Image (cartoon, rainbow, N blue to C red; front, side):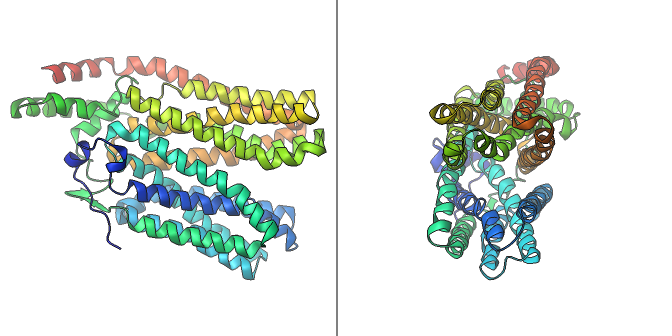
Length: 473
């Protein structure tokens, strides 16, 4: 199968539609397969471990080992992408995420269980970084919001299908069928990963824009959250009509760029990372404590809440991510909806905590539980998209893989540490304490985002004024 031909940066800037970008469709299908296989196995593996005589702690340990391998791999993936390119990483990630699960058909004793968890975690960590970076690399900056929304749909739909499908196949066909289907997902995802362009004309994807003055000024603009890097380069190119003007703009941007990169990467990424990490603790609260809390209140409807709660959250998350992506592409600015998403997240966990305190039964319990998951999921999707776009906007385009890695690492760290921290709180203050504590953590993240937007507008006021004078000269 021949790989698609990559476009040069100039050709990429001439794209009018998201779907004209070579490799984007293949990326979305590969991502769908990766997250589809992951969501098939996520609820099934703990059940299978217990059915095979394993303990609850072993089932939990397998998930913990998987997440630890994921986070460690995410830290190394940007280097691997710079060294090997995207296609080998996407193929490797797809195969590692699904094929090792076939071992479970033969043996689910502790050693192979945890070894396979490590291998699958390596695959998951690789794909989560690569897919998020690819949506920024394969399209022009002005379409990144749309490509991020498309990624959210691909991930969301795969989870909406995968969670119930995995449980249904497990109960009707047996665990072997689930593991075989996950392996099939992996093969299809790997084939699509091989279809992704590996190099642009003039350089490898992910590296070719490292010396571009326009990409540097895109990152500078993000500090003020004014005109986004999503479309600033294209507006300058459109206004530059003759060689002398082009040279003047380029020289001026180089001068501005030389002054702009005095801040360390961690400073630029701190606030978006805090936003996604903070709201991820709320997701940990829902994924860990909603079902047992419902069971303690009304066992008759707890099964429905358990089965449908995360699917409802995932569906609303997909809607929030799509709307945030489209809004960012329309306004050309990332971060405008971050506070809205965080406030929605706070309301969601507060509703869940208040529901547990009130202890309603029957239809009222279902209504409040699904309302809480809807409100939180919508805000969760918004913050996911906004935090990722804020990282892309703050860092130069040559560091898109690093931005993706930071986003994924803070996301997964917030989820993992949140589950541990909230578990300690729940043991001392019951389930409502876990949800109210999550609300407090998200509130701190929201305050940081608000402060960053206020301070950030002043931080580069003089630099932006200089760039604007160059652009209109």
